[in-house]
Length: 215
Image 1 (cartoon, rainbow, N blue to C red):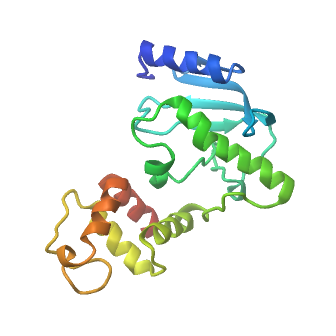
Image 2 (image 1 turned 180 degrees about the horizontal axis):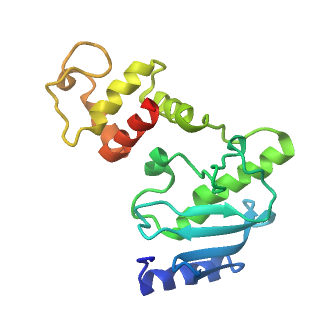
C-alpha cells in the first residue's frame, strides 16, 4: 500500500491541475498511487512539441525509491536500446545519478519537468534523427561502469572499483591508501575529491553499484 499522505496527494493533484491538466492522480486497484494520462513535451516558449500516453506508479517507499514509469501508447519499442527494462518500465536515468537528476527533497512536479521531460524529449528526438540529444550511457552494468568512469574521471576499471569500495564504507577512513593508485594515504591525496563524491553517492548506492558490476 502507498504511504503517500493526504497533504502530499493533494499537493501533487494541484501541481498537475496547474501544469499538466491531462495527467490525473488516483489510487489504483492495487492500492498504489498512480499518475496517468497525456504527458506533453513543451518548447522554451511553451508550445507543445509532442505528447505521450504514460502511467507512473509511486511505490510505497516513494520518495526514497523512484517513480516507475510506463509509456502506454505503444510508440516506443520496449527494448534496452530505447532505455526500457524487460518488465516494460522506462529507465529514466541511472539511479546513481539521482543526486543530480532528482535530488532528495525535490517534489514530484520537479520530476515531471526535469528528468521525465528530458527522457521523452530524447525519445522524440531519436525518432526524428536517429541520435540521442544528451548522449547516453550503455546498458546494464556497462552503463554503470561508464557513469562512474565519467564521475571519477578515469578510464581504468580497477580505479573505479577502488573508489566504489571507499564510497561504500559508512565512514571515510582517511588513513587508508588512496583509491587513485598513488600509494599515498587518502588524507594526503584525493580527500577533497572523495568527500565531494560521498556527498553525491551514498554508501548503499555505491555498494549496489559494486554488486551490479561484479555480477
